[in-house]
Image 1: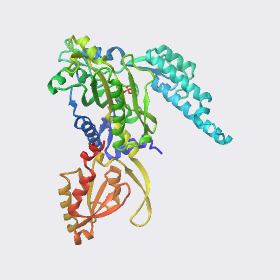
Image 2 (image 1 turned 180 degrees about the vertical axis):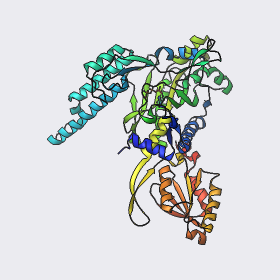
Image 3 (image 1 turned 120 degrees about the vertical axis):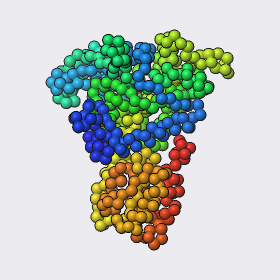
Image 4 (image 1 turned 30 degrees about the horizontal axis):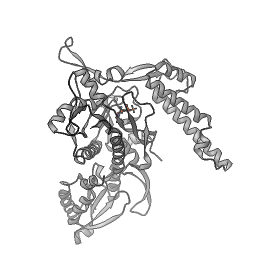
Length: 510
Ligand code: ATP
């Protein structure tokens, strides 16, 4: 059973993973802060993405471009003209929605209902007809398909009137009030603007970037020259992006300020198909290698492609509110570089020595939201289970089952009791370990309570100095998930942990 988003949000706040921004002033919608544990978790994920890109691929280099860019960048990229979402208000509840997500969520509800009813019917009749075959005959299923197909067409054509008609004709209800009375669909621009320069009348309108990718395209010639790269090669970047999202109701899934990890891979035209396949699978493997369960991940190919795109797929994760986009892999042809060449008047080409000619490289993009990866790991890792107590009873424990490499605190060291000789040994061990791993030391409360506290922080290893340590210099190492304890000589603790927390080994097996 997946933990509900509201429970996860309060857990994340209690533990210091994620806070609403400016909380003492009642917060700001769609904007969040990462607390002490969240900041660590986010950094680790970003670090493993960065290493998997730049350390693992000798032809990928990093970049850190500015958030504010020349306004012409966003004209060339098409954002000024087309970066809109359709919004609609319900007349009864007065709630505002993004139309595409409203219709998509309704279609999903219809499909799930059809699936439940069909399954029940087949079971009752003891029918051997495959579920998928029977499903297509269900009215709700057909309606869901119809809604999706009309939605896709209208979105691709940015036909807001067609969306208005669809809401009315298909009687799409407001999730809040159930009412089907809607205002007309309007478009809403997603880029934030601000002013560059000190004097208001001389100031120039400028945008906060809605994606990091354009910095990569614009710096393409400089990176190419300075890093002396040969096609195929990639440029990777991690950074903040800003979108004035119409609604931001799903915790950190949809934020107005968020962080992206994007990589643009430049290839010879004609080879984009094989590179698209490579990146699709490599990126999925990265998520799995960090512990996201294969059953919680799926590809969803885009049905309607942007006019310049050759192929596009999303890697979706099973959040508590359904499978939703975690990452996009896009085959973007030479669209972006050509547009910037057109708008800037500069040549953005690559001279291919082996072919003896110049061309504009094609691009495969991998684009993942860092905040969504954090949310996926919190959702999957959050576990409540009954566990034995020291007194022989049972109690509920909350564990955050994070991959050991992602844990904000990887090791916790405890003296069993707060007595001088126990404390001294535990401090000694802590002093050794903290240079190698994020390590915590705690002596307050009973040992059971300390274990529970660190289970909830996701700490994979807890080490205890007990009575036996004073006799033979051994300590116990407790595993967060299995609760299994082993005894190790104190001097073997560091190599034991190093073997289990080895980034090089993780990269080697990716
Ligand atoms: P959606 O359809 O959910 O609005 P999108 O298709 O617009 O997303 P892209 O433009 O492809 O998203 O952005 C790439 C990645 O950036 C997404 O896969 C997602 O992980 C992340 N992302 C996009 N918008 C947000 C947001 N508002 N909050 C958090 N992450 C986001």
